[in-house]
Every structure is written in structure tokens, then in C-alpha cells.
Length: 132
Image 1 (tube, rainbow, N blue to C red):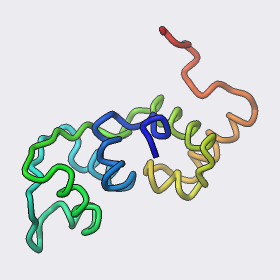
Image 2 (image 1 turned 180 degrees about the vertical axis):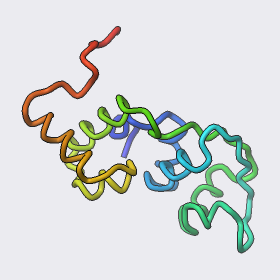
Image 3 (image 1 turned 30 degrees about the vertical axis):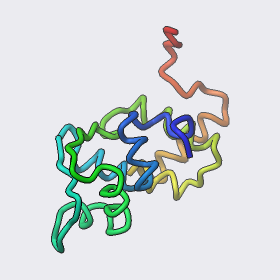
């Protein structure tokens, strides 16, 4: 998957998603948003990283970022427009409702509502159009 498939994620969260998966990127973007975190070269039992994103994803993060500090940008929390665009993009890319709800941390009714609006021809943005 490439950055083009995940326009709802920032460049850093896209890098994390490439190495550790979308789930890990979104969890980090929610739980460690706006923090600078140190990714160790090795982790011990009880370390926050594998407890938060899982052991396999943590090992992948260590392989890519071990020994460095990275700034974790926020995911989608409270960003209604970005969430709306994310749901539209995920729908176009064939994601199921369940997959979309898990990745974005929104309810099924939110995804269904957005999908219904898309089906009815309503725009997936805020109606202001693009500046570029």
C-alpha cells in the first residue's frame, strides 16, 4: 500500500503504516499524538510499544526506527472533515464497513451515514472546494 492509498494519514503515519501496519499507525496517532517518542533498538517485556501496537508491529517499528526519536502526529481525532474524506477514500478503495470502523475508530452508523451520502451524490468534502 502506498501513501496514495491512505490520504487520511500524515506522511509520518503513512511511514509507520508501511512498516507496522495501518492499525499500528492509527493507534500511535491516537494514543501518542503530538509526542516525541524514543523507539528502542530492543524492547523488554512490559515496554509500552509492544503493549500498545502488538509485538510484531513493534518489531517492525524497531527494525525501521530503532534507536531514534520520532514525532507522532495526531490521527483523526476530532477532525470531522479528515474523517469524512478518509471514509470516502476507504469506500472507493473497497474497504468494508468493519475494516473502516476498526481503522478509523468510528462507529458503524457513522460509516454507513457517510456511505449513504456518497451514494446519494453529496460531496465528500465541506463544499468549499480546493484551493489548488
